[in-house]
Image: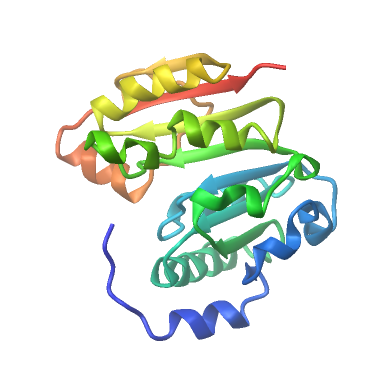
Amino acid sequence: MRIRYKKWARPELEASEFYVDNPQELKGKWKEKFNNNNPIHLELGCGKGNFISNLAVENPNINYIAIDLIDAMLGLAKRNVEEKYKENNLEPKNILLTRFDIEGILLILEKRDEIQRIYINFCNPWPKGKHRKKRLTHTRQLEKYKEFLVPNGEIYFKTDDDDLFNSSINYFEETGFEIIKKTYDLANEPIFEKNIETEHEKMFKEQGIKIKALIAKLSK
């Protein structure tokens, strides 16, 4: 998603208590940063933060890391987090936002971080063959996630793109993940205990596009 430059984003992020500017320094130490032993879940490509802010507010006993590469997106995510927590009279103690290129995810996460779940929502489908290795669900990326997911750790994946979804099923199976649930029409065949809709999801549904989704579990 393209978004206009927002000059306020960087200063606001740097002043925020729940933004991490140098995530490399926390590799293996994310539990210490949260200062508790609660499970840690991760969203790759958080965008404007609508999904992760709603999820984190509803689950105060789970810690959340949300990653994106664009300051403007993260600035909006930061404001959305603040608004959602304020509505619920809570402090954002269980969420951290950070700016980083997911391609280099192993520079900021490792086994000691014990990530229990990853969320990938409506990532770039990279339809051209030469670009497919950039997909967040490509085998190359999944092998990286295995380095910090706990045994039986899960990936929750949603997309509007048929080719990406079908290819991803193969990617997961090739890298030793077990697909425990999947659907080609999430609205009429729910597979999540509670589905928090993203901005993209609402848009695609209004256009009559069916949402594909799956839950993949990492084998022990």
